[in-house]
Image (tube, rainbow, N blue to C red; front, side):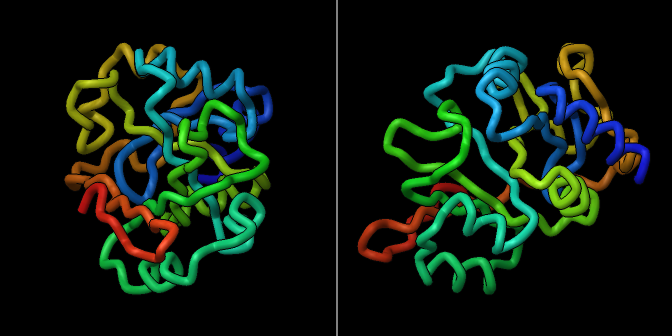
Length: 187
């Protein structure tokens, strides 16, 4: 795991992309503050920039750096959610402009996975996580289902957990409306 973190850090610091395991499905990632790196993710996925990307952070403290005012409902939902949950927040700061949706929102998840948490903590910045597939194709349940096209397109592929065959699930996605209402985007 340590050598994968070191190699991932080298790629992230150079503005490159990585293919890595998350607390949900395998993801394509990059520095969430680097516009050019984010553009590369859109190219790899053949995805329109109007579709937003999920951002991973390692802690509440890192979340506060991006979302200075976090609705109390978000904390409450994260505590009781039975699985990893991405929360859509309003008015993010200090992120690449192309990870922010046109309505000035961004989906952020505090990771529960040991590898991701250590990678993000060592990097000191949030990273992008988007499923490791071409846009419109099925999300791979584990590493062996990831297409060669994706594997060839990224700059570094993490070796950690490649042999796992446990079916992975995408995160739940919730949006906290201005009035405090929780809206489920994906359960």
